[in-house]
Length: 197
Image (cartoon, rainbow, N blue to C red):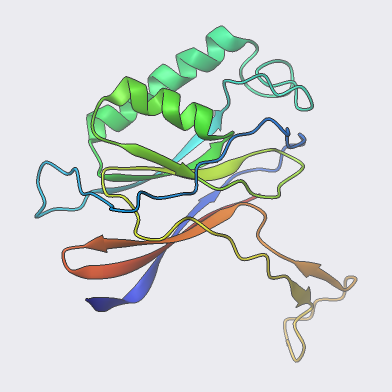
């Protein structure tokens, strides 16, 4: 199996909002022992990046979402938003969707049930305690590696940097992301999905 000589990095940018990570958040990082490819046309691979803007349907008490802490004032509004997200995905008919701003696998399972298109959900919880948002996947091609994360942190300012940073020193890492691999058309593709706040 040849390695494609690039990594696919999917990045969603959003403004910072303040919420806490709920302990009831669900995750589904484990791939099947025998991955399958459920694409109707195996000669194409349709990829989609979608910032689903607070795909939260479970009540998140710390964040009051759905409620006063996010755009969805109640469960009815949250499920109306879920219907809109499913319609967009159904219309575009991608094989792999990187979803930013997802609460957990409960929401991904609810989305997959609405689509009825051979998608499987995958998500590994991040460490973002201010928003509780995560990055997830729904895909017709099962990854070949369980989703995992890299908790590395880097010091700033970067030693030897000439960009003129004069603030305090610290470290920085990416709190919401996943890493996995796909096999498509005889190639292994490393996929990194991330959301920067």
